[in-house]
Image 1 (cartoon, rainbow, N blue to C red):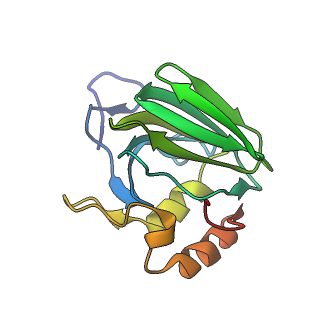
Image 2: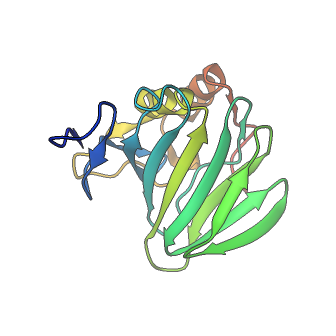
Length: 167
C-alpha cells in the first residue's frame, strides 16, 4: 500500500516494509513496490521472495530491460545457456532479448528487488497469471503449474517468450 505522507510533493510514494499488492507468481511471492503509473511508465519495481528451488522458466523479454538486486540468499541465473551464481549484494542486469531464468539455490529463502524498464507490461502479466497472496502458495515450479499452456500464451501477449521449461 502506498501512503501519502503529509507535506510530501505530489507523486512521491512511501511503501512500508511488507506492504504492496502481493501475488504468487510461478511459486514466488511478488510484492509490487512501485508501479508504472507512479513513474510515468518509466519502470516498475517489485520485491520477490523465493523458496528454495523456485523461479521462472527460461524466458525472453522482447520489450523490457530487467535488473535483479539480490537482498538475501543465493540464486542461480542461467543466461543464454551459461550459469552464474548471484549472492547477497549482487546485481544482475539483462537487456531485452536475453534468454534467462533464475532459481533460488541452497536451503534458505531468497529475496531480491526486480525492476523492469519501461514499466507496465510485466505488472499486467503478474496480475493476469498470479494468485492473490492469501497465505497459501501456488505451485512451486513452472512445470507443476496446472495451466502452463495458458501462462505461455498470456506471456506472449505481453512480449515475453517462454521457449520451454527449465530442464
